[in-house]
Image (cartoon, rainbow, N blue to C red):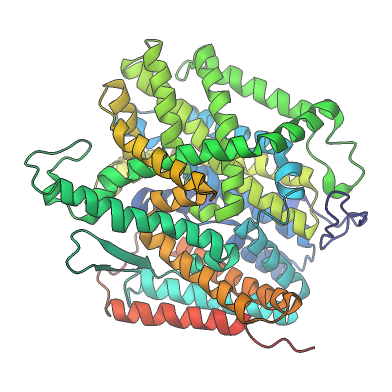
Length: 623
């Protein structure tokens, strides 16, 4: 085995024996600037559409432009630190906007200090709980957990470092992805989403978000995982939604949590009011099973960490295997648990802190594995948070902690857990990138903590400004996840949560598990709209076709590398343009609302980018 990595023989791009510039003053300044921009833009975007754009790849591209072209700095590890800091801002913003606006919706105006403490606590929890899992998930399972965005980001950094044909593939894909996003979101030349109702099958529909980034994610994760995800979407949109519509067609009164009779609902209404709860139950079950399956690996990882404990991070033989000292992890945990327990406007108390640690550990672990399978873009953080809020609220009710105080405690714990899950997923992707390029894990972990600190300071200002300007839950700023979180907590505190829907989702995931199929990708597909899983399925099919028609493993590997480079460009271009459009909207620039062409043009455009990905990857490799 290679001395570079005694665990699996993998050789990183920069060997451990070399020590180029990495965590520098320049990387801190550029990373902090980009973290603030991406965090604010994604907060606004997520509060409108309920989704954020991954920042790792666009941050890597911007970092290369600033450091390599403008500043003439050539260290790939320094570029990697910039994208690590930047992506932490996007991830923290996602965790915040999914939960904390619930306090504003309840007219409980949290202060800037309160928001900053909650954000910082969740961010630190997500980073430090992931550190002992690094060797188990990133190193030992390097060949089995693809971490799509992390792998794609490494390819972007490689291409920028090496130049030549690899760079042309990435930046060619970047141009295509950016142009596509510009045409759909800025110009509105054609709609982003297309869908069709199925004839003689009431409220059965299939749709597709024609997004090159989702196509690219499907290509990277491959046909099997993409197919399992799509199966969840098929069951939801062609099975459960029509079934609910059929049974409830003649209901004359609303059935909770719906506010109008089912007979008056379309498929989007049924998805929003019923299927999302079913999906949340499936994700919760899949997460529990996933945790149980990986428990031996997790235990061995932690036991190894405990044996070294205070100095394990400093005594590793290789630069590429050094972590933050575990004494620092313990100190950070104790300090912020103490603040959350006793800070006046938070005041979780001992029971609240205990719940926070238990659920934080659980969902950090689950999130770290989920993103290894489906990527950060499809990481159902809000679904996991719903599961956590259900259990947390039930426990609080059982001990008599109800009313407004109980709701605040539940949403505060849920916020910290949600932020931790989002940050741990992002940390996992970044550590995967660093593992491939040969970064020092310790400096990446410090960069994550630094990015969390910077974003935590400014995110409160963004939330308060947006609430004052539009109001969370309004038509201008619907904050869909936060509204759902507030409804879950209120439902449990008032005793009217739709438990049947939660258990139906858990039963669906259990059935899939009994067939010997991993239930977590299926649960994710059940929770997400089929519009998101169908383009992922197309990407998986493209990779599957190339593998089937390629004669040798070596040739397929070469072709697949080309496809990943092009797919990385698709993701980078769309994400970059998505952020630019979000910044433009935030600055007050009015975008068109009606598309100039119809959905046929959307399908033709998506077919073209799909064909180009296939053509690029399947190009004959010259020996």
